[in-house]
Image (cartoon, rainbow, N blue to C red):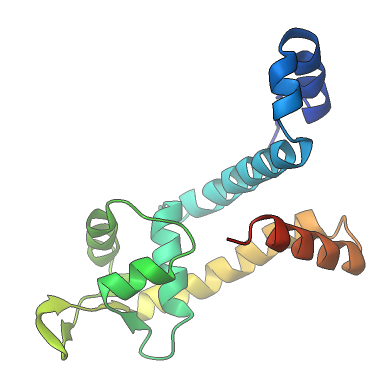
Length: 162
């Protein structure tokens, strides 16, 4: 993936020269986090597109897959457990069900609602995508030593702890 955007260093130089208030207000660390997240999500999006999935759909599959068998949750539990917030979860679930990646069994604890459960096809696809995601992660983090990775993780957890 070719990224033709200016570097954060160049961006900061432009801020300093033409918008000093923003230069003082903006944190280079946060700008780098935003740029890194954007690049990674684009790379992930390209990998998911090969399977006709959106990032929200993958997040549903991944959230269900990390549950104990039979890999199911109520829609409310699913929303709480997802890595990203998913507006329009009903639409996402409909698309996944239509693609035979999830099942919607009745909720034995609440006859008015349906559970969300990974289908065998969904389990298989989640496994395939796990390898792809692993490659994407490794491409980025192998540039850092194990100690640097641990330090980065610790610093980001500290910076974003709420």
